[in-house]
Length: 370
Image (cartoon, rainbow, N blue to C red; front, top):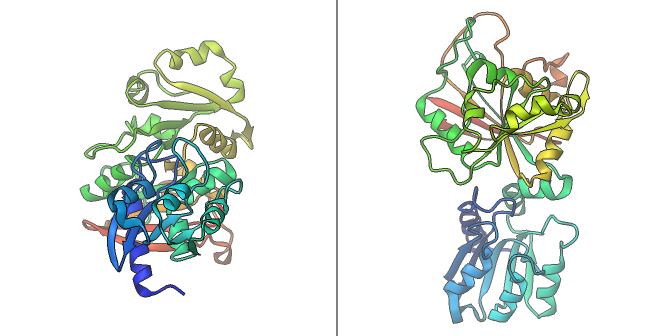
């Protein structure tokens, strides 16, 4: 059994792990706390991809005090040589006597091996403390490992009556400045930001993280089945500063002369099959996964948002709701052609939390089957 103090210390390890968000991908976020005689003697988290793991930083801080101590780790310590030596070996060599782990490694090729190595060294190993929270933390990593596709975050901003724009198409700005800053903070942590060609043509967006210090530079992905991306749009003009990936149909991608226009500007153009008159979104995600992209934020427009929902490819939703009423009729809802025939068939994402941001509310939701 785990004590309330154990839970408190693992919660601290989870807090530390989140400090690595945006720096460690495609690795998972991991935190570690080392305790001896009831006192914290070492803390650490995985700080950057390719760098030392959480356990190493915590052990360095603890020094000789790690001998006979308890380590609280959010993810099973690794048992193999990769970019760094095995963390299980480091814990053994330091003389740690007990290791409490939140969740196992989701990689089926290595899962359980770290625990086995620790137990073989006569270390008391416990598993499952705050497991659900730890699994949510590494959900993007787990999805990339198991399905070879990135974790999909659907993001949109709407009025209180569910509109993305007025009946004349005006959408600047529905949400407050604080909400827009929060959206930029998400961009600064993800591997890719994805929109459809209609958004590019209508808004000429930049899609970079502004007003925040980016933790990583997201690849800007455009779904453009007919290669209509304007060569002088902001995305293309800034392609050498932040990557641009234009996804078109397999047929259009074979037209080397057409593709060359964007390639010369620094954009990458790839083709995927068309299904039902649209780009195959599953193939799009597989292409992003091949590039080791752990998470992608889908920003729209409505057709793209609705297509991802219809295909069941969404893992998380971030909906910014402004206390404004826009009214009117017309195609300015957030879901495009996504529709259900009856209330009992409605999608019911789980609301994880609701955050007040300035005068707006942000609903953070998890979807099943993403």
